[in-house]
Length: 151
Image 1 (cartoon, helix red, strand yellow):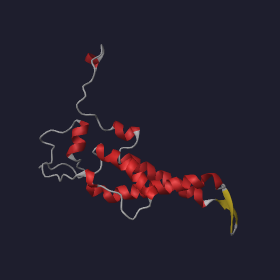
Image 2: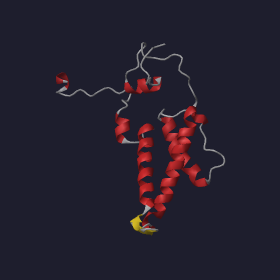
Image 3: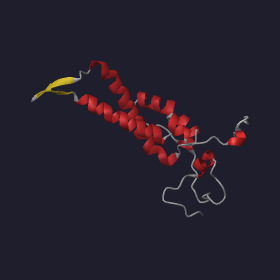
Image 4: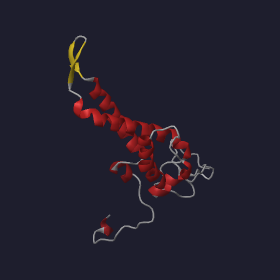
């Protein structure tokens, strides 16, 4: 078993990045079946629909497994809240009257927090072009060009 640093990567990530070799593999790494991930039974149909649209893609990409259930539930709850806020967005003014006079509408600071959290989850689960670019596709060879020898 490799000693490695404190931020060890799963074998699947190393394989996707093209950095998996015998000295870097963790043969004791647990393997889970991501197909067992399911939306919680007590969720409403909107949350279940979000789950069924997003989570299977993440599982097929090899990014999520069963231990990620709670993080994925949090992500879907956040996406549900974001969709709910998007429906209300057109009806929310920039400024409202508070107890001490006119003030910024707290809705918009909540919206900013949700966007920030969403971006963090997108990056964590490989849902942005930048986060996908960090993972190299395995099995693909580079095409030879007249400039290949220069690289």
